[in-house]
Image (cartoon, rainbow, N blue to C red; front, side):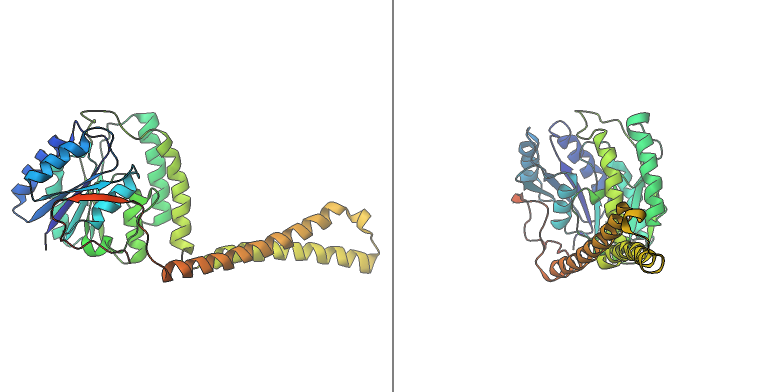
Amino acid sequence: MIEISVVAPLYNEARSVAALYSRLKKVLDGLGRSYEIVFVDDGSRDDTYKIAHSLAMKDPLLKLVKLRSNFGQTAGIAAGIDHASGKIIIPMDGDLQHAPEDIPNFIIKIDEGYDIVSGWRKKRVDGLILRRVPSMIANRLMRILSGIDLHDFGTTFKAYRREVIAPVRLYGQFHRFIPVLCRGVMKVKICEIPIQNIVRPTGESNYGISRSFTVFFDLIRLKFLLSFYSRPLQLFGSIGASLFGVGSAVMIYILIQRLWFGTTLATIGSSVFLLGVSCILAGLQFFCFGLLAELMVKLYHDGHKVRPYVLESIVGNCSDPILKWS
């Protein structure tokens, strides 16, 4: 089996793909280990695929996966991991903001026995207001919610043992939280190493300030999935029982006032009665939502697996097994 697979999703990176390939080859050749490079063209509209295709035709160690459209960074990484064959899988950005020269440091830590080695952009060169401040807030929240002491969840530059990342299913924008998803599936040893944070040498970033806002919604989704993914009735049922209890207490109060003290509904107020009825109905609805969510979880586990991308073609060695989601 190949020892190292480097996965790089590409989207409109025509001006950097050749330089990325050249630097990766130089670094990986120097390691003295078997390796492959997996480029994923995520529906680029420039000459990215054309240039990468010409490189793949000349180098059997370069595998090129082409997606039919732009499915996003998470889907690009998922496609690359699915078609990677190495014992160690290293995703990274394709815009040269990640330095291939840092790869040996990841391998050293993997050899020390760690399952996941996460990159840490210790000295960031991004804008303070639009990038660093939102990232700092998101990383702090992520440390609190996940219990994993990492400084930088956002970077894709990480190294994983194949058996650790294979069971993890990626979709949405969860590529930032792969270590958290891995920890949710099994016990893993995680460490962090400083990496270079380089100003993008060519082109413009495909990600703006809007991505920082979506992180907060992703944090909520991730917390729900980690805590209640396999038992949603525990969440919805608890909320439903609480609302039902409040509504029942209100109705009992109205009943006692009417039977024991002769207080009419007009005196108590119709709003109190409506509050009790609304809480009871809402509680029942939340409980029903929980039952439906439990059914959906069962159908998901019993049903077939669906990937978050559509494959168009593969250039390179296609005989290697694709990682299967568990």
